[in-house]
Image 1 (cartoon, rainbow, N blue to C red):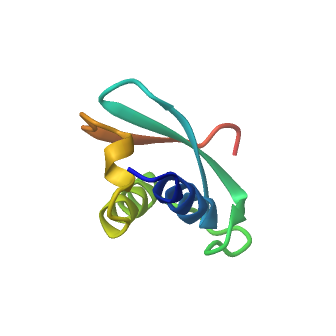
Image 2 (image 1 turned 90 degrees about the vertical axis):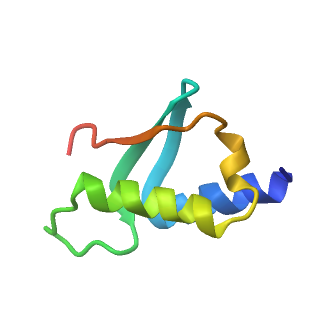
Length: 82
């Protein structure tokens, strides 16, 4: 995997207010910041499944990004104190 793939994936996640928190070998944990989500209108509620699907499809779209997470089985989103 090239470094550019990691940058492209993290930039794509940032478009939806997502940031990589950790990866334990099977679960990728992402933090979510609704204020940074370019697709959210004020007061709109975002579903965790929508964000997980976005993160998963972004891995598919970026050829080498999936290599960052060998053994990936699950993606979870931490909404923190929304």
